[in-house]
Length: 136
Image 1 (cartoon, rainbow, N blue to C red):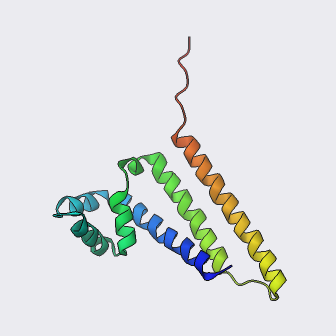
Image 2: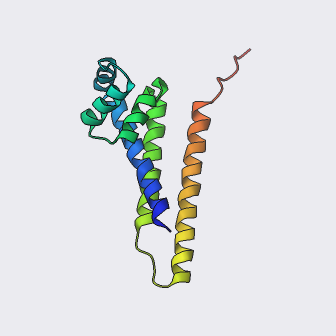
């Protein structure tokens, strides 16, 4: 597994953690954004307030209010767990030998991708579930 994939997973994890923290600190976040003259200032205030980088601050500014619902918070927590697990797998030590390492990495990454896809599909299904028809 190359460093680029590991860095991508770690970057995604930082973004998810920032969004999760923003949901928990929503009053402070809303105040910081509302007191800012423009988006650039809001981004800077959030970066300082939450001790996050500019990319994470942008993700917080761009997040939708639907993230505040209980279901979305649960979905976000699940995605953080899966992304953290994948990031750990990508940084784990692998067996010695090129072919062993390649097989090990392919298997672990496949597991991560399948788990992440499954959790995202389940979250999408929950969030887009249709109300049950009225009983006659």
